[in-house]
Structure formats: structure tokens, C-alpha cells
Image (cartoon, protein in one colour):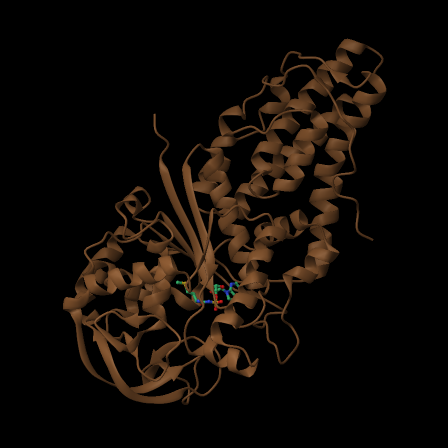
Length: 488
Ligand code: MSP
């Protein structure tokens, strides 16, 4: 049977500055979902990338005395590197300055041409969020997100008849295309007011894709950026249909309007299906406040990776904050989780298995009978259920309940005190078989640790279907380094 397709994307980041912890958070969560789907045998397309056009990049490049393209080339490298450092398993990193993207945007713009008309845009614009605002959306003239004054614009522009899609957008909300629920309700409230048409082109900036039917105009950055979700799957070539509509767009809470109201209405106009789900995650804050350059609270994930194992960071980010809520970052909490669940519980369990096998079984665990006592606390259905509802933190919590249960089982059996070889083998076999399953379940969250566990148990990486007890064959273990050395 052909594999079922699953298309997951993150937002594409503005490479106006190096990546920060928020960018990493989104990628790590999306990666865990993508890897989970892989484990379940889906044909996964996982895209991430950089959003390189627009006024913000144009200005930053100027400040750096570089052309926008040179600046984008330089900056996007740090985002690509970030993905590598943190073992992100994307199969496409899309840059909006690539020729394939220009082709897709031009094609898409032509498709929606009948909903586009010429006029003049007059009003406020926030370059940091590259968004047009009405007076009522501002706080004393300041952008509510960036807490900075907006700019006043008056220029010739093309408009997209977004207002035409108001009812369809409202109607489509009944299909629950936004999670968490309260985020959907926010949009529902905003859609109760009359929807305005969207300015879809700019004439005062040149750094972008020219509008195919009037090259004096540049496609508005969000029209350009959102189309990346089609470019990445091959649009306009018909092969894009394998992965469209997207199963899930993972985004932060500041860009829901763009992803629901703008993106869906554009797609409706182009007569394309709309994404099945937009999952909105919260923001990672520092002591309750947004990360801020001026306060020096921007966390650089590259530096963090020099100090802590990347799997500990990945684990901490997913486990600490319920997916969808805002979270707070602290090194103290990260260290506590590393030393607690990872070193004392998971690491200790593996260590016990390896040391005991070495000492008591001459490094070989023989295939043996499964003990239902240990496996009754493993609830794969529950874990899968949490993953299906994108409650990633709960899935991790449930997996770790099993880790704790395994340690309890070892404490109860005390194989280190036993003399009977058969009894020792049976206890260790059951612990090692459990560890094999734990390694599969944890691989979406901590891929490097999972590989290390497999290597020490001397087993191949498995899939979800292998999360059944009794599948461990006789194995000669290979002692390796401590999985998570404690951080002092
Ligand atoms: N370029 C646009 C997205 C276009 S998608 C078609 C953009 N870029 S961004 O660099 O500002 O943000 C990229 C992603 O990071 C967004 O989903 C945003 O919500 C997320 N985050 C930015 N700061 C964040 C935190 N502090 N915490 C968690 N995620 C945050 O918007």
C-alpha cells in the first residue's frame, strides 16, 4: 500500500538577525511531529526556511552595507546551520529568493488576478511585522506587537478582494482549522467585523518579486511568503497535489491572522484547497517578558548548544511548556530537567541495564519470556492519542511514566543481588526490551539519545509497530558513554 502523505511546515523566518530561541522552539516541535509521523510510516514532507524579501530585510542589508541578496545569503546560513545543529529532519529548506519560488508566486498571482484591482494605499505599516494596520489595531499609533510607532504610507497599490471571502472564511472555521480552540475563537471574533481588502503590492520597495502583470509593483511580502507552502511541494507542477492541502502549518501566535484570513482567502481565490490545520504555539519568554535585544534577553540557540546537549534542550523545550501555551525559558529549569528525568531516570535506567549485562551476563542478553508486570504500564494508545491531538508535552510525560516504572521494576527485582543466571537474564531482558521501546518512542524528541541507546543495546532503530514487548532478540551489548552526564 502506498504511504499516506503528510505535509508539515514551520513558518519561514525573517533572517534580519540571527535565529533566536523562539525560532528553534517552533522547529523542534514541528520536528517531533514530523518524526512521529515517520515512525508511523507516513510519507512526510517537512518544510522550513527563510523569508528573505521585503522592507525589513532591505533596510537591514543597507545598515550592513550589503545588497539585500548578499545579506540574505549570509544570514540564511545561520538558520540552515541551526537546523543541522539541532537535528531538524526537514526535507526542504526554502529560501524565498530562489527561482522556483518566483515561478510559484508569479503563477499564483495570475490565478488570483480576477480578484485584484488597482488603487492607492494610505495608512499605517509596521515594518517589523511587515503588516498594514488600521488605526483601531494600534496602541496610540504604536504596533501592539513591537511596541513601536508605525510608518505612514501613501502609494499606488493593487488590492486583493479579501472582503469577498468573509463568509467563506467564517464558514470554514466550522471545520476547526485552527488549534488551540481559543485561538480559533480569537479569529472568529475579529471576523465578525467587516473584512477589508488587502493591499497586495508595494511600489516604494523594490526588494521582492515583481507583480507579473505590472512589474513596477512588488508583491507584498506576505503574499510572497505564504506561497512558500506551495513552492516547497513543487507548485505549479501538478506533483504538488501529493502533499496539498497541507496537513499542518505550525506557527506562532503573532501570525494567525496572516495564516488564516490572508492565506485561506488567497487560496480560496486561487480555487485551491485550504490547509487542514494551523497549529498556533505560544511564545517562549524570558521571565515572563518577550525576548528583547535592548534588554539583552535574546537567547542564541547556537550558544546554548555549546553549553548543553541538544537533546536536553529539545526535551526541555517540548516538555516544559504545554504546546499552544506561552512558556518561560530558564537555564535553571533546563538543568533541573536534564539532571532529573534525563540523567537520573532515563540515563540511569540504560546504565543499569548495560552495567548489569556486562557484569552478570558476560555482555549478552538472551531472548527470554516477557513479564507482563513491567509492560502493563506502557500505554502506546495514550501516547499516540496525545501526539494526534498535538499535546506533545503529555506524550513525553506518558513515555517517562514508563521509564519510571522500569526503574521501579528494577528496584523491586534487584537483579544486582540475584545469583540465579536465568532470573537475572529474565529481568534484564525485560528491562532491555522496554528500553528498546522507549528508544523508539523518544526518537522524535531526542533523536541523538535514541541512536545512542540503540547502539548500546545493539539494536536497529524501530518504528511504532515495533513498540510491542518480546521483539528484542538475543543481543551482545556495546557499552558506550554515559547517556546524560549530570550537570553540576
Ligand atoms: N516571516 C514571517 C513568517 C512567514 S510564514 C509564511 C515571520 N518571521 S519571524 O522570524 O518573525 O517568525 C518566525 C516564527 O517564529 C513565527 O511563527 C513566530 O511566531 C515565531 N516566533 C518568534 N518569536 C517567538 C518566540 N519568542 N517564541 C516562540 N516563537 C516565536 O513571522
